[in-house]
Image 1 (cartoon, rainbow, N blue to C red):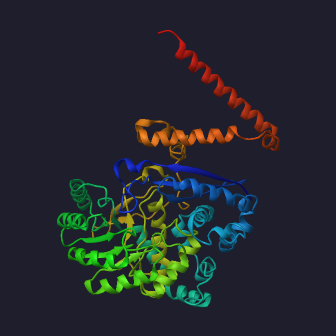
Image 2 (cartoon, helix red, strand yellow):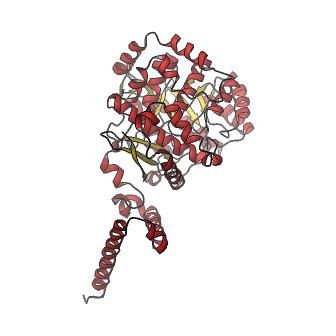
Image 3 (spheres, helix red, strand yellow):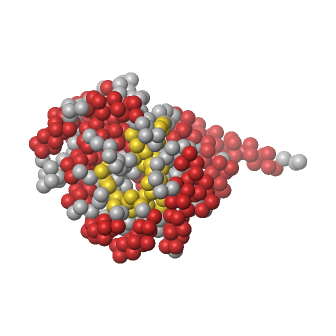
Length: 501
């Protein structure tokens, strides 16, 4: 079986209309993803995505397309699924593309989308959801699927294998526990920075009634007093027996983070997430040292570039909570390296989620962490939101756990995550039906979609005869038919406008 195509879709949703997802830095996010399909000449295809906030899709989609020559034509078993780490390195270590990383930024995210699709294929071939597929692997097989390059100063392959063997006993009971009880979840859906206080309070009451025990709010307002006001409102609504977390989304300098959190510590947050620049390992360490006596932990990792940044954060004791993201770094093999290092350091993994597809992904990764790496649920909780799950074939579901708190239900469908076919098309930018409807996306975003469509048309019109001569003549005839159709519609519209009333 061979890979015959790598299809790329620019998928966007207008969450900015209601300030869903807004924080101190990203004030008008449109939850979006670049959706990749690895098409084979057999019965199975693989589906993967990486998340952005809208226009970032333009860059990441181009990066995904640039990977196609490295992927199309490969033998699925021999070149991809037979050694997923080698396949990862084929993508991330290409001699020319690597230069614009290396192993970071848009290219790493594009690699992540393709690698998520490859792992999706592996799980579909096994007929299992990804988390259960990985959980079924014996340590000798799993260790070969972990990317340990550049980590030997903290963990060698032999040490990793010994650790995985130590964790293996009881794995089947942990799988059964996940199927029965699910994985603990927290909500961010009540705490977006763009929400007015009344909406925040109403949403807190709604999520308390639904059984949530963990609530996260965004901080980093231009006026710190606004953060205090919102923290007081949330604490009043959720009470003293529920847990509050805070997220600054990299807004503050190091001294500013320490000063602001000394004020906000009165509301007893479990952690401050991304208190400063995501690459400032030493800064996170200093913030952690300052806040530890106040009982406030530091969490980060949502936009950590790669496993080496996580290595340094863990080496410097800069975080109490490790926040992997399912789409930021290059696929599950690299994520497993982070889970391994965090487990060996006894640092709790509390994944980032929320954006389109992220919750669908991290439920798998959280359960893999529990079954294969940490073996412990104490103090571990996975982010969740209520946005955009309806577009997936196997959307996230939540149910009360043994303690009555909300938990992720273990996914049952084979694979990692897959859009419903109609959803993938309807919100494809800029030509999907929803983006052609100003009432659905608002005038501003509708105008942006139409401008993008015109730009595509202008680019197509500028193609030279020499370029057309290089393609299959049948494709030229198809293009000719499309041009005739467009000209006919334009003529009909012009005639209609000129007709007397």
